[in-house]
Length: 241
Image (tube, rainbow, N blue to C red; front, side, top):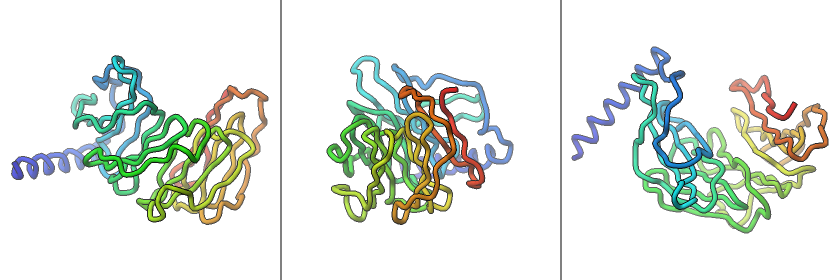
């Protein structure tokens, strides 16, 4: 059994190198995940560019479920790579930490931390936020640091070394938050809020760095989301025109 696992791992590494060299992992036709309900969230693993997490709604139970899928570069399709990682009453986002050892789930007014290898729950926080938690994210380089943002107008930084009972810091926002993202060097947080309200905060102390000059539409249904480019030179903003 150990020999089979070693051989499988060797083939995976070889396939990964081939995908990186020829670029086949970058594109391919859309395909079915084989899951029964609506896909709610996607996340590439950081160490393996051909593996991704898929969060979807189970059509029969109505629960959110998370599975690891594999991108088959030869056929450009995804297929199930491992068993069910989690079933949850709520799910709107999935994210992994810097070394792909911990899975961060967001949804409802809560977030959960799972061991990515076993699916075992490590921690959860269900009382800090009073409204929907949107797209919590791990830092780029620190495996135990992550941020959460919520429609309750709060963004918080968490350090797993301190536990999940209370955050390292929290900040009140001017509008409900729709997502949060770390810069490539982890020195800043990009926090997106409803109706084109986007701010940058210093991650060390939550100090205000800047606010994007975007005109509001006076529409609470304007779900704004912003992303750093890899070099942090630009911010890509997605919202209603």
